[in-house]
Amino acid sequence: MKKATLIFSCLIFAFLALACSSDDASSDVDSMTPVVFESLSVSENLSFTDEPITLTLNASSFSTVDFVFSDPNMTSRKIDKTTYEISASKGLEGSVSVELSNGGSSETQSVDLEFVEHGVVNSNIVEGIKIDVDTTERLLEVLGEPHGKLFHTSRNEETWGYYSGVLFTVNTLTNIITSAEINTYSRILQSYKGDVIIQTYPYLINNSLDFSGSERGKMDEIVDKFGLPSFTFTGTLPSPLVSLKRELRAPTSSAQGVYQYAYFHDNNQEHSIYVLFYSDAIDNYKDEYLLGLWVD
Image 1 (cartoon, rainbow, N blue to C red):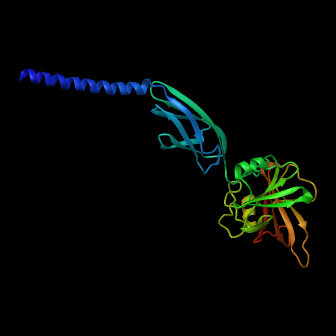
Image 2 (tube, rainbow, N blue to C red):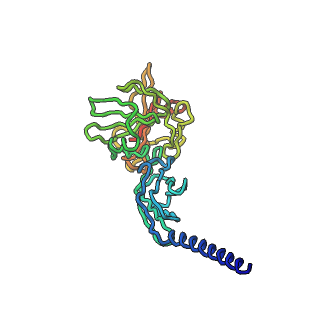
């Protein structure tokens, strides 16, 4: 009986010893097996700041994931072991480096990403498009095909309209975007493809002006945010450059005049916003509707 008990005890000890060795071996394999990092893929390389980019890891034999961002305004959010969302709090171009490790080895791969901001920035960037710099190639990359087009062959221009409330003017000789009209009310664009409804622009203009909640923009909102121009333009720009007003069409007994107010960002002639409105006098802007707002 004692002999049987001894044999049984030895068998239990041998089994336990074997089980512990298997766990250790499994642990050793994890730390000693090289990390396999086959690829790093993203849903897209360009996105708006309110739309995260999905990053997918095609990898195995790793236990830790570390991110290194070239810009501190970028962040990551884990979806599952191999899927993450990359976001940015402002418009930027940067790289994301991902290091996979298991305590014994590590592998790193990187990808370049770009985020652009909705809205008008510094009176010269509209929906990520730099006025007088970017071409239709960039416009297609950021916003895709326009929802409507107008052709102005007599002056070598096209208008590209988007549902989101912005119409870009394109120089057809250079393909450069020369201006952007911001829709301050919902209206119909009579495109060559048919009528297209362009909605009120829903994003901030220079981080302050917002028409998204109004039925139709009024000049009061413009002057409240940017001030009333004091310089009247008669053919010569002021030096130093300041905001200005000008008469485009004088009023008559049967029709109001057409007036323009222009505002320059940081006194830079290349970065400006101008608005048009009807009135009976150049300073009588109150309660007058905007005819249009352009980033030029």
